[in-house]
Image (cartoon, rainbow, N blue to C red; front, side):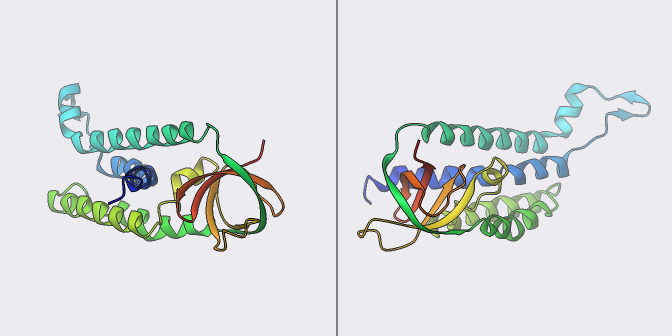
Length: 195
């Protein structure tokens, strides 16, 4: 394995974990035990926490994934590679809805109160993570989409780059715009309009 692949794989895993933020929030809501009174008496904070360990774990996971989002955003604030001119562009934001409808919503509907279904959920999330990172689907990210990121497929004015490049950005990109870029993978970049 090339040492250059480790940071890219780590970044893919972070993108995947970020994409699960909504799932973690939905899972926390779906597993919360709202009972705070028993026989007309307050059951106490300890018992409330004890009855809600699983939702608390999901809340912690959501906080971790949200903080990864801000770490990635910070990473991309630095200087990027020299600019290219966009020669053609296609909006790929539908990929986010596909990811949400295919993976997040079905997983959110699993009964996570029962232990066997919780174990199945964890196994599915891990297997999904392997597929998403290996198949480079990590950019179709509902959490980043909610934060204003957009997906595009572009071509640039460099004869050495003949394939389309799948890009993620917070900027509205159009043909003839100049973009600065940071490589995430061979044909996947984080971009911003040239400042």
